Amino acid sequence: MLGLSKGGYYYKPKPESAESLAIMRAIDLENTEHPTKGVLGMVDHLSLLGFAVGPKRVRRLMRKMCITAIYPRRSLSKGGAAKFRMPYLLWTLCANSGTASDSTSNTTTIGGHIRASDISYRSSDIDSQLEQNHEFALQNGI
Image (cartoon, rainbow, N blue to C red; front, side, top):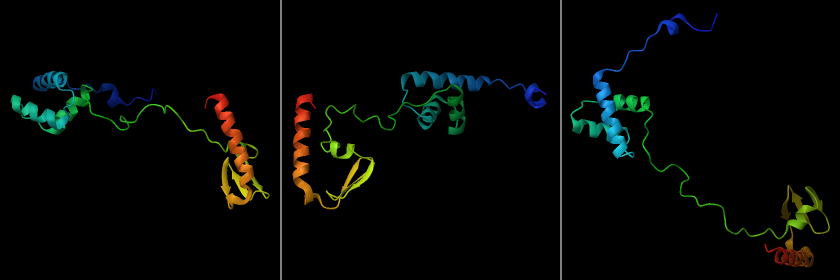
């Protein structure tokens, strides 16, 4: 009725043995001193202390204590935000239409990207547009 099985209701987990508690204490002390040690490094340290343990037992105990090794994760070396980003000077050519074909300049704009089959066809228009964008960038400090 409650969505709980009888086995789950009556199950009493066994407490950790005294030996496991001693191993856990040694793992905790070593992790405090050297947090970069993983399971295999901890197995080596425990064997030097006289405990006969394998990696499966150490891994289980470390997971039970929520201990993980500290090491560099992925993408930690990436820098912050870029200091300067070059402006896209042809934005006014793309801003007029989302998806269109301009038969006079022989260019196609698809999703804000210019696809040109002949760039030199109307270079004077592009040059004037670049000059306007450059003046705009200078005025606005871009």
